[in-house]
Length: 183
Image (tube, rainbow, N blue to C red; front, side):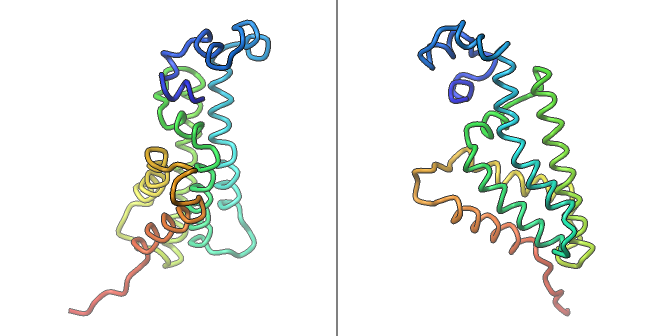
């Protein structure tokens, strides 16, 4: 994944991957049918855990509010990104040039749609302001989380829990319904 991120998927050859890994091209082909299979694994690494997090929040039936489930998804999304940063970085750079990329983009849209559904439910509960489009809020929340690939480093000053706390606090303190002032 590192080489895909540095050179780009299209510009990386199996020969480049073999050199990076210190193996022969035939060793790679022994385990993978194509470069696209490697991309699929990377996309799955980036998307599978996040899909589980979002699916669990959407289908939660234990009485937890949509607002709390939404906060949990944002928090866990930061943790997933931190744990899978190279794969998430690659995922965020795909443009739909291959069938694997097209499928990854479909999965990303599904995640956005599910998160927007949680936003709608939190608005219906009265926990979030209702003057913003749930689709927009979903994209902004994931956008905030996804921006971490540009600057977050596991060896940096902030651990994933601290970053997750900050993102969740900033996102939801800004989205919380505020009492209207009388004029």
